[in-house]
Image (cartoon, rainbow, N blue to C red; front, side, top):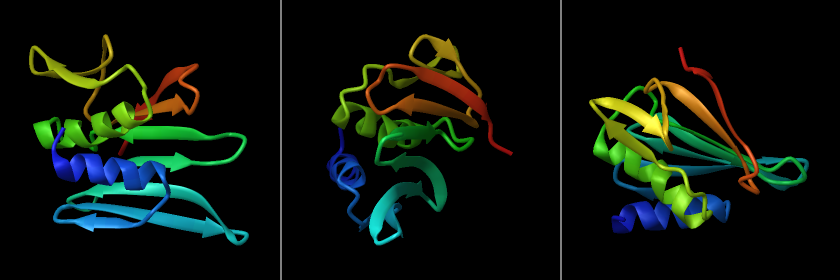
Length: 122
């Protein structure tokens, strides 16, 4: 994992703002507390995480099936100890063993108990 990916992933899961080159982590507040963090790559939303009772993670390739785009959410999955990763097989993106569209949003419960393929982003 690249150093920028590792640093961004750790800041993301700790709900801490971060900026390095093309990667940005933003923290969103509501009711006086942190409720959500988002990660952007080249200005494209590639991940969001919420805290609290319904803690969850959404990750996507945002339409770009590139090595760097896959690496950022894979770094988050590694930090959170989620076993599934984005890969490419026969030029098609996959999350775990499931072929997906590059714009599919993958919803992962924080406890990794379920992985849901939500939709293609428009």
